[in-house]
Length: 518
Image (tube, rainbow, N blue to C red):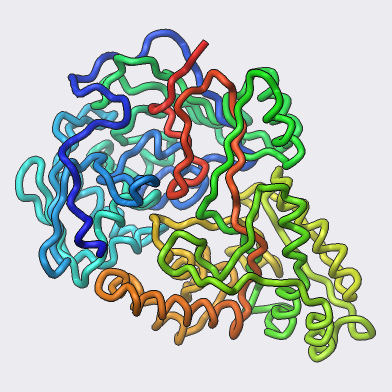
């Protein structure tokens, strides 16, 4: 089914872009200000990028294809068309002509080959998405062919939010040093104009005058990313018009924003899952009975009610709308069951007291709600929960050092597919990157390793395997509790025209597609 739908339509520019040659950057000084509660940049190298910088990088770098949330298929971006062989092991992409990098060099087939090969060799971040590729061949200036070891939907892979960026590998003799300095080598509509690590106004982008899509219609010419951990201050900045877009407000403020003249709100389902990852390798949660007790202690229904539309119940691990979703697995609170499990482990009411450490991202009102409610519930079970809000980079570093019992984070797919919920979070890995439950389960790994190929060759078998790995992660290993799937609740200025959410690129605003209005 995937292979039958892989042919792209004829060359097309992004929505609203002219077919004519690029014009100079937009006139005036229209600025789009994006507020985030966490650090924007964790990694500048596009071959290794695997975190919050997605929101900025999707405006700086481009991929061969783009996932369309309406058609649920890949559409052209840097590639205008593509075709697979009958066995799905050879894919040929035809590239858009006249594209240049911000360095001034042309983007051609050799640039595609060298950037993807560099990403593959980095073996970092989401580089696993290219694991099926055995070789990349330049067929001509605008044609590149991928030879695969086994069939995968490469057009979908090429739309990934991570590790699929095409960049200028000739930007500097030492690319690592070049990127660490906060410089870019992309082809997107915006280029890096300034970066101030650790500052509130962390990142500034400016329009790239020679962008292939052109600048003849109204566009923002400056994009600023500001880090504002205090949700109340973010709300105030938005009300005063000093911010253009806030990706997440507290439920009460979001309800208020809908009634404020000059503001707009948007609510959309997402592929973003809230996760409570348990330390399965050390400490008191090494005991699976304690982990199962924590799964049962979460007040899932109460959280959904208190989120006031910002979350929906989880079923399985993979959200609805993607292959791998397992229905009929919505969790329920069971305090009696939690008490019995804790007592069997020597804890709980009347047993030894238990002290657990939980970390979550600062400035997220939903995480704070979870920590508050869970603290109260666990207190009745003779468990003291020490919850700590942290900047994401610090929380992630602590997680990689196995420095807490419960790590709370959001997860979304690298591309619109269920595999990365398991392959990155629960596949064995040492040192851990996002396997922050520290699972080391060879049986699980073996099942997971079959999924990329099965997704193409036998979707029904792939779905059966997803059901098996879901049961193993949630029931047998009890590695995680899943409180909710996020509903995106955005608030932004009324003058921002053309904003649409795309669940495959969470928290990304494609600023080029917007129309600034007075």
